[in-house]
Length: 289
Image 1 (cartoon, rainbow, N blue to C red):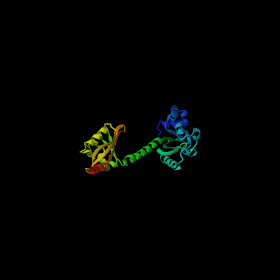
Image 2: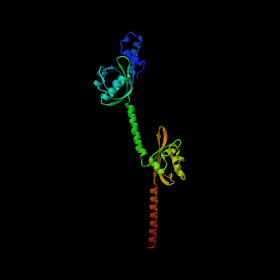
Image 3: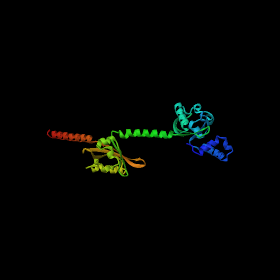
Image 4: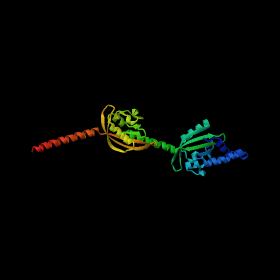
């Protein structure tokens, strides 16, 4: 909220005492500069009626109205805050405490666009209210976008049916894994995070898996690279690892996808063995003809 001498400057602007007082006259001149240069909307209103006595350009930009259409008129008459319940609540707070800070309000621009704002009001002891309005729309939009991004991440990463993990390239530390990775390896997320990937037991007895990961950490892009990993239950899995470098928080990380092809490879080997047996039988039969 406005602080002294800003409040005192505004008082000087709207009181006659500044005419005979050099100090207040100086403050009056400063108040004009304050209004002109302020980045937030500032207005002065009558306590009883709420009619605007003065406002700065930032306020006019915020609501999209001209100065002539605002001065001498109340919020109800101008219509930039069409929420009587919120307005009544603000008035009750002001009557009870004499001031309010960061009161949330949705103001409406003349174009119809809504702005999420914070209103601070102070009764300065004279017949006027000092009001400052901060436009929080961009911050609110940023928070909404962040929540949307987090929701999309949960769907794309956490709920992905393929086993995924993110590793920091600098030291190989596991940043995060998804549920499919936990299910595949039998290792809990809390037991994996913040540990260097090469130290995990999934590479026990299979150094080729560690070599594949080290290659990815060094910046090599991998596509369906074969590797073998061991689950927490001691079961060996045949994997295909796809990995690429990504930038997170200004630092290089490696995004890895582990695809379990154990059953597929097993079926392919069985099919190959079956085809070989059939070919041998066929050759034996043709030799006897």
